Length: 56
Image (cartoon, rainbow, N blue to C red; front, side):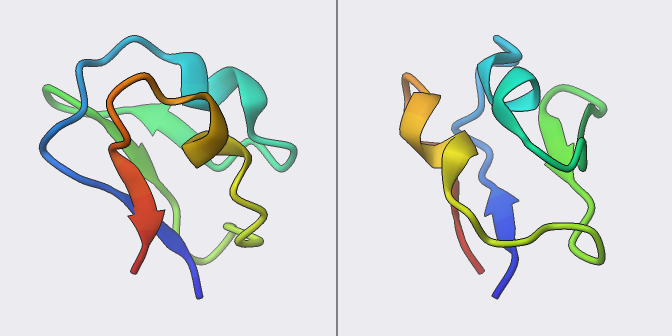
């Protein structure tokens, strides 16, 4: 199950740097995860200071 980033995102970019498949990019006001490329590893959730990424 792919991860998604909630509106709690503060756009710090920590998650994008940790993603092993590069499926996280900066969106409009928050970062977004490409669900088709996400491998559900949880790396993004582990580094997010506000807990924005979570399994969909």
